Each structure stands twice: as C-alpha cells, then as structure tokens.
Image (tube, rainbow, N blue to C red; front, side, top):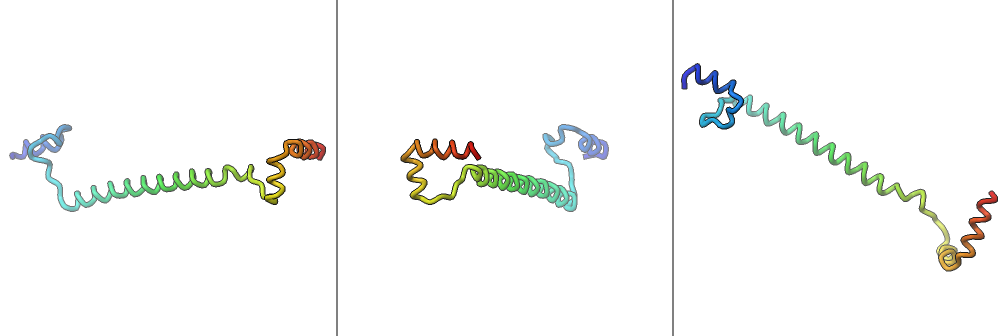
Length: 94
C-alpha cells in the first residue's frame, strides 16, 4: 500500500469495509477499549440506580394505606360494614 492509499483509507468513511483495516497502535486500542468499558460501566450504574429508585417507590407507595391495628378489631371491621360507617362518621366530626 502506498502513502497515497494509506491517506485515502484513513479518511474514507467506509473504512470498516476495507480488506486492509486501518492500523492502530496498541495504546490506541487500549484507550478505545477503556473508553468503551467506561461507557458500559456508567450505563450499568445508571440502570442499577434506576432499579433502586423504582424498588424504593414500590416499597413505600403503599405506606399511606397501611394500618397497624389489633387483628380482632380488623376482623370486626371486615365483618361489619355498620361499624365501618359509624367510625367514618365519628372521624368526620373530628
């Protein structure tokens, strides 16, 4: 390959289709791999962070509906709709 051909190949936008790929030094290859690895790590960290946020949201989204009560009282509330309405009316007065 002559000097003119090397210059043409290095500036060609289709160089990935050439039979003779452009020459790269070991340092250039390592630098390119390290840059790509950094991008992949950043993407993975962002995905993990997004998953953590989603999981936290799922865990805490029902906290406002949660009620800690006596199981016997909870069973009576489930059995008697009248009791529920009476409590509701009392709460409105407060």
